[in-house]
Image (cartoon, rainbow, N blue to C red):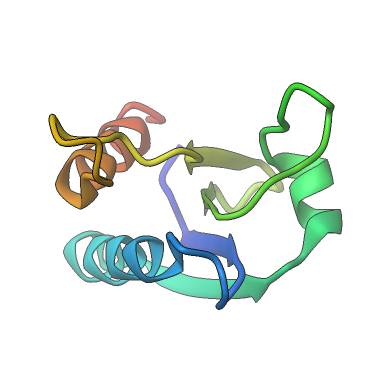
Amino acid sequence: MAAKKLILVTSESHPLHKIFMEILEELSKELNLEKEVKLEDYSFLADYGEKDEFDMPFLPQLFVDLGNGKIVPVLTKIPFDSQFKPDKNAGKEEALKKIKNLG
């Protein structure tokens, strides 16, 4: 099943917002996919996203819409580098691998 659209659910005030936006932009260009940004859409997250240990959805999360009604999370947590800083490249690679393995 081919990916149709990337969907990012985020908050502009979240510390990882910028990194997730950069990943969204880069993947959208590389894969030639439409993109959509939803701000603090907890209803969407409750339906499709991962939840924490208290069963609460969290931000930000990146999804792929397969166009058949199926929406799959592809990046919900940014990996950290050896200095415990968010690793944008590792996050992008993780999302890319998940998207390519959907088919």
